[in-house]
Image (cartoon, rainbow, N blue to C red; front, side, top):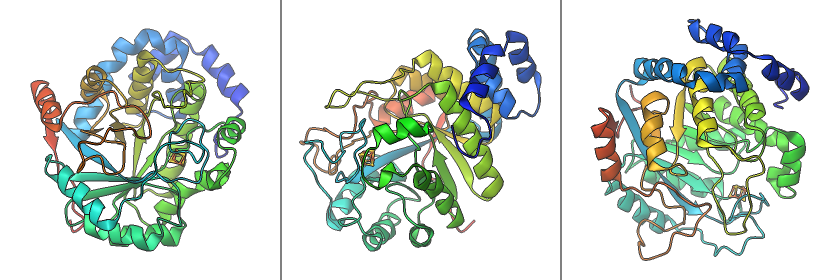
Length: 366
Ligand code: SF4
């Protein structure tokens, strides 16, 4: 469990097993909810109340985010990595061809993404500080800000000074998944490399908060461990971050494991039904917090979940460095994508549901 959460897994497990439908309904009737309500809504008993959870979540989603959906696209700038994450095709032992884009190549990618009608970018890189020093990242961020109004990063952890440099250069958001909050499993899945240090990873998002980064994105990789236990830790993590970095916005992501070339299989598979229950629970308990759903999920699921929960979705994703400018290249990246619709197709689908896609939704000068 998350170390900040002063409860054992046995205590959480026993509590979840004891939740009944009346307790779930009582949580749903409240105006303000807390950690215990989150446990009630993710409990096995709450499976029977998903129908009732949907309109409540949808009302909160509308109250805080209106009819808008924000689109972003990830730009992979390097797939070199010195870590050994068992579930990732970029891990140091994988035979995936490696590439770190030059600044010029990154600019070409940016232009290709911009031409798709995207104004929000997520920069992604594996952990290889030698080929990706902070100075280089700072340069990249400054260049990307010429093309995109909103810029977030999903890269290896930095110290507070490093995050501050990137924040000053124009970074608005930081995403850093804990992958699993279970410390024993974390050690098994991350046997070597800097990422094997669980506490350093937990601490990294706080360093981003200290640096003033406006959006702090957290999550776990769905499929590694029991999703209810992970959800309890994720909720506690969000509560802790909200208390300590109240000037920043918390953003939840729910990345579900998809196949990778090594054949790594989900240890604790999460079904679409589980995923929906989890997202509804988080939307209802944390109504003001942001929520993302990526192209790991199907078009049908994403079309459904934007109505009740998610306000931020990725579009036209490529998971290979250089994949946008060089469309001839096969997209053999970090994981398999499920929703391969174009930006236009996504916009049309959302329009058909009465939703409006927005590209620019944040300006630092305001
Ligand atoms: S998940 Fe990230 S840190 Fe781990 S191997 Fe993949 S790119 Fe490297």
